Image (cartoon, rainbow, N blue to C red; front, side, top):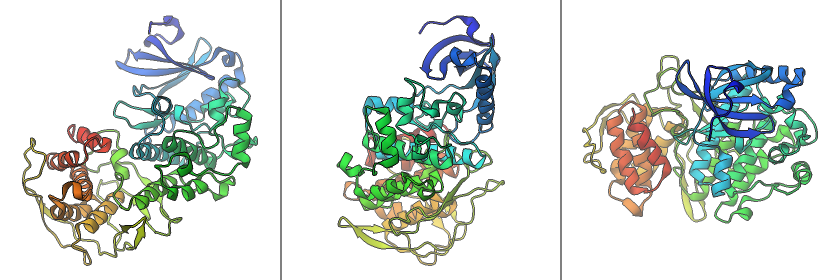
Length: 483
């Protein structure tokens, strides 16, 4: 792309190049000469800039969105101002495109990727709602990817600043209409429940490749949000399990009060439904594996965000799997709960194991054999001299399950001895038992999370051998290599 006229942005932002255009204005990539970094600059369209009331509202909404900077998986805003009577917003430049780009190019996405992105978007939206900010325009085009493939939510509140949610702007509403909640389609004000509904539509599209109420007519699609029943995902894509349908029924309920109370709970139920249908409690990676913006590191202030309100993760399936990721100001892992309910049931002929009642173990003292960075198979798994949980089966599958659930709560110290035993018990089972790959991934990630990166790399490399082509394993390897 060629440079545009330099006077369109303040002199500080040099070499502007157009990278996007929407109903609200233009987006440019430029260099912040003061700080020497690439930024994205959004300019309000001239037709709106002529209206002083719209300019003021745009700036007000941008400042409200700027309060969210620093929250997990949220696009960081660096500056808000006006230049030549046109308001602008300066934000971090993300080079990975958007989820809309991915959907247009590839259609339905891998379940693991979709869930990771949804978890990141859920963190950002729940954090915004906790601060009283409603997005109003959640859609794939506003879910931006960085170079590592992590999602960051953009454009908080900006759609309402220029009236896009009123469904009056030709050429800008069609994409938005596909994600409008029933209450928005009927002209009511958007609420956090509206954002959660829109995230449900995004999830449906990521998994099936199409929106649930897709139509060539904007009016027909908006009316379907209000009146049409939620279609079955397994009817849209036969490879998806019908166990997802109750989750989407709740997420896309016409009545806002009947929807999930948080985005995180919705995504947790999606993950659980997929795991149950697959007959494995470790079907997809834990939440924390896709949340961090940088390489995994020991828990410390600011590096690992609070993920709250993950209660009732499987209420519709009849399994209680309440999950709460916590951290304290000192960076110490929270004490693990002492009771986890075990339920064993058969789904599609496969036994599903959920951990049984356990007593929280004492903090383990681990002794690990240094790993050879060039190997892919650990020569001797780390041994643990710690009090084991009072009731722990020797079954390595169950040990992996227990370790995984502790990882989800952020209790990596408690997860470590369980996963070490699981890996040792599963060693050599290979293709005949996918749990060996799962357990190596979980143990590798846990070690990296505890700051023991060289040890973690050994197990992540083993997981990569057992699960070739798994993007989550590759991403964990890349991050571990940087810590």
